[in-house]
Length: 217
Image (cartoon, rainbow, N blue to C red; front, side, top):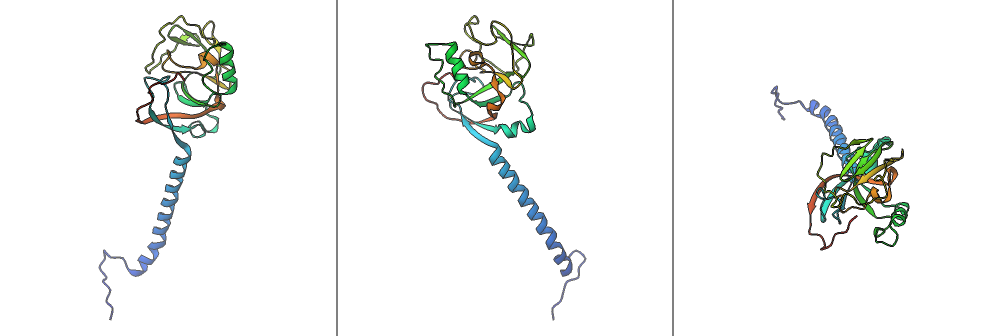
């Protein structure tokens, strides 16, 4: 004869049978949620390597960084924000403007299609002007709450946003490297089309020893 324990703190066989489907459903939903999170993370994030000194001191040559892809960082047409550090395609049009402004120099050492990383300082519709080591937005000095490296010669000529204010087009942003003394950025080739942004910088993962020379990019 099989004897069942009928203590009040133990579930009956019929109760156990009724609970199993609920537990299975919870386990299924949790597994599905976990798969979705992992899938989103795998698609939305990528990594990158910093080869140049143009974003020092934030990013140094040899840094490996975590990036959020543009479609995830700026969904549903959300515009980038001032101060965002973004990666983007250096387009052929930008390369041609760079070459035209500095004929006979090595200003075109960056090839079209390369991925660069810079910081957004001016947004669509704003006016930007750079006087010495100060950036002016709509005629007012920009308070930059991050560390930059100033240019050695503040009287240097740049084709864009120096001699007179530049109005950023509605589909563009104006980007600079934090290392203002060693960065090929919007000062040389003009505003950046938002559509060319590929990702947003999230954090630095780790650092490896870079090659001896690091280019200005």
